[in-house]
Length: 385
Image (cartoon, rainbow, N blue to C red):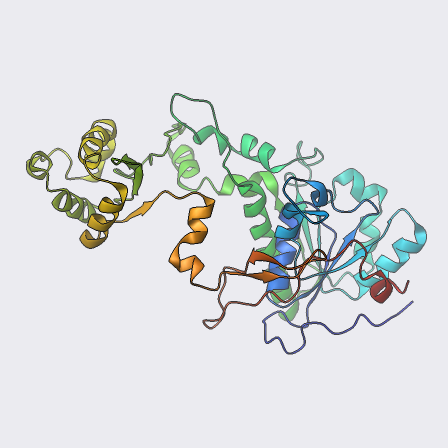
């Protein structure tokens, strides 16, 4: 059973042109990893079950019949629907696996066994295999379903997020899934490189729990080195001050004063006599130890002017800072609104704006060549139906 898959991305000039990736994954982390490969030129074929990827209905909001959640991570791929419990469908998908350079999947161990995913892998032992898992294989959590918010809860990320006197808080975006998807993309590209170097068939795991814990970086290393359990600090930094928001007359400004030299520039810009002559805050360790008192002093100064006034003062003084924007505000910044990060994407329901890849290659951002497809839209071409 052999049929032509058709040529895609020919002449794109993108680094992964000619690479074929089979994407069995659902929801976010796996599809994001596969989408990154597609953004970079790979021919990605998404295989969905008869009911489709559950993320298609994770709404509102919808765009047409699809959740915008689905649109966010499913561009640059062709789409087939197959029931791996059906021997005929299994054989068709097995044929696709034989022609793939890489596979991305996020089956639970029970699904891996019941659908004989190992049989698909045996069909192409040279294929790079990327498994997005709840936790490392063989661990007590590996067989349990997991989601972004559960990973945020188990990883310690929620434990350090939120106000000091309030409850733990999840991050507002699905950070656990995103980090895991990025590790999945790294694994995929690394496996392709290993194939070129003569070591095909590598199996990579990107576990949701450990990937999310890796985002703790300095917080985790501080605990591992000292045994001191990090606590929630709201918007403050455990090791740097002032490194958080200050109140202005009409809102907030975020400061990121990371060095003593930057602090000196801040004090000069503020023009406050008491702070200028004080020796209490000259070193970062002094500022961290007295961050609450220093914040109160800064708030008293900053509240005398508007946010826009302070943004101008801090910019002229060379003090690292930023306005605190909502999503609409972020997209209205000149860097974004006047740039090429947002582009248009075709969908089964018409064109829609979308974020393009953040990567730039030789100064050029990859174009959005195709948007998400209807469920099973490419069955005739790819499965011979």
